[in-house]
Image (cartoon, rainbow, N blue to C red; front, side):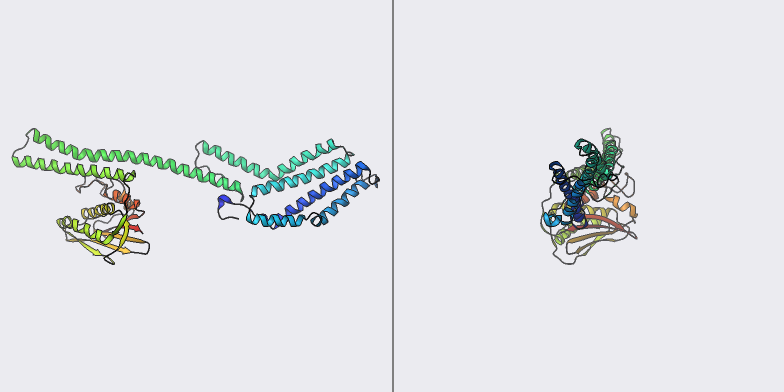
Amino acid sequence: MSSNEQEKVIVLKGKALKIISLVVRFFVSFVIAAVCQLIVAQYNIIPFNQYSHRWWFLNSYSLTGFVIFLVCVLFGHKLGNIRSIFFIINRFNQKYIMKSVGIEVFVANMISLLAASIAYYIAFQASYWRIITSLLWAVPVYILVFHFLVRKKIKYIKEITTGIEEISRGDLDYQVTEKGNDEFRILAKNINKMSIELKNKIEDERRAEQTKNELITNVSHDLKTPLTTIIGYLTLVKDKKFDSEKTMDDYIERAYSKSLRLKKLIEDLFEYTKITNGVIKINKTKVNLVELTEQLLGEMSILAKQNNLSFERDYPSSEIYMNLDSDLIARTFENILSNSIKYSYKELDGKILVSIFQDRDHVTLSFENQGDTIPTEVLPLMFERFYRVDKSRNSKISGSGLGLAIAKSIVELHGGTISAESEVNRVRIIVKLYK
């Protein structure tokens, strides 16, 4: 039996071969005996003698047919090379396998024909060689025997049909019972798999619709807040509602600061949309990951010092080369480092540890900062759009809330993974990039 269930089949050998061989031999022997008996009776080759008036079938014709039947059964493998033919079939099926449903139908047909032939023979003898009467007995026997042999398959087909009807009505939780080891079981399994995948697809579409609505709501809020503030300060300046030039300059400075935040939000949102929609294509080149990281740490060192922070490094070597899009990966690391700086303790001189670990098939980068411990159940949500751990959209910490979401999308574009860990006032962002 094949390991692939979608092509599951049965090799015709062993007991199945012997059973089919015997059924065919009995059937062929019976047909030969019946034909020979008809010829003997038709041309009167042997005189008819009734040996018992009580038992009608004890006559010379019946005994002749019975003897021919026994000879064919006992010596048929020699006369017709039936045995060697079936060994050839066996060898053929070891290379070219037959499906199990076909075998079952074939065996059912052979057994039904054998039963119908016996019924025909008995009726033919009992009705004194009336062919029509014999056929009237043989045909129903064939139908009844065949129905009896395949009734379970017919019932199972009805179950599968019922299952398809239930699923088509929208009951995607309905599961068709899987029975047997043939193609019908594979069909039932595929129907169940199809209903599960269809249900998951519908749920994904619902989640996507919900996410879209949440995105619109979040974007509207995050755009409205700084825009309202800008309009408020500019209105005060326009209406000259200030006491001095210094107050006016303060209003203008605040409006400018909010406009920069609004600009950053729009840029991040635009970039995130391009990445998630596949507009941006990665352009991989051979990059020294250590050199790229050092360059970013140098650029962000001023921002770190302004927040009483410094960087620590832990590299296994000075050269670790990988095929990456340097611009996109640089943006990823920049977003992660910015996030680490924003949410680090700033009361004391803190440190942000940047580590690189090289393995045979991947490279792991770790960005660790000292900050509030984040609950385990919240860690995966850090990479969602607009998610903030403090739950407040009016947080004093500036940012679009898209930085880690953009980082996640870029890492996944490279076939990597990104995750977060937190323990004892430490937060760690881990990026895995595969070679």
